[in-house]
Length: 498
Image (cartoon, rainbow, N blue to C red):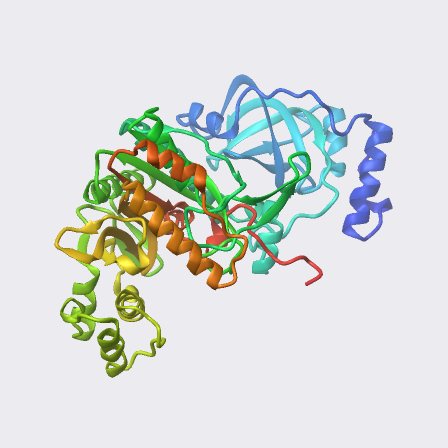
């Protein structure tokens, strides 16, 4: 077993020191990475059990804990041991600790994972502590940890080495705990509301359900080019056709071969659902109830901080038709404009640079994005989108240029998109063929018509409301995170060489 002179014989390089200690441990202790070690409780459970233990009091209870060493004082006499649930102090002294365990102390570095068996007490200063009787080396860490109190200051390094970010940053750890809770909360809410969860394919032979550039792959056995899912929509609608359930949802991973920003990641999470015999107004109510439930779960209140703002997820949210929002912001009354030419002229007269072939609806949507979107800080439903940019939603009665569609905004971000879903099979085919022709004109020659979906719709899909929610952005708000990379464990990033 190593003695107290060990540190004086080791290299001055921190990484080399750890390698030398590992070698000595293998020689003198034997197994440094044992397969079997069982603790009796986690640190949070221990803290809760002995919450009422008075200062300067020792129990006769023997417990076994395990975790990573985060700090060491007085040559290892005091160590802070962390597991996923919290911290406990370890005390090692000749009066309480066996000679073999004390001889191990010089070999323990910050970052090592150890197991400790000992007596529970509370110090005079009130610190819950275990008087170590035995210490077991469970994992020797070969790399030094970042300085605990500053963590990783390099933002890119935080994303590249997320394990160190979480290890040294309590805010990061909390955000991913909140992410897990939010995902569980969405699932429980939907199930309690009568929705059935299903799983649909991630590999598609025909990509669709959204307008986006796909990731392409190839199936060797089938000799078939395939695409990573950009949306689960067309499969979920086929589930409605089947009659399996009238309320279906999926928490799904989607992949879009497009840009990266603080709000965009090529691989992202959505919750998509379809509700037979409901419409887009029913879906608005669903969104408000879901958001309120999640805020209460995470914050215990419907109001919560985001940056320097206070957000409120208390329904009902503001509801405003897109033409009304644009008229209020710019004075342009698009409902009074009859033609595409007049729409372009009105936009140009107001100082907006629009393309020469844009339609009435494209002009309306562009001005909305330019003048209104940034003002939508508190949760708001923007309704009555132009049909020109919403080919799969039902028309607004009495106004065929608009459709029963809404998007939910908060902090000027789009969080959700919903329709009263088109279920007329002839109209569905016409619109999909038109969309395909537009895609081919843009150079998307691989884009195909999804005949299997159209065949299913010919069988008859009930009227329904449909919804897609960007889960990552929703988590950003609830977890007070400024970037989507702060709430995705391992976000897309350039290679280290770049």
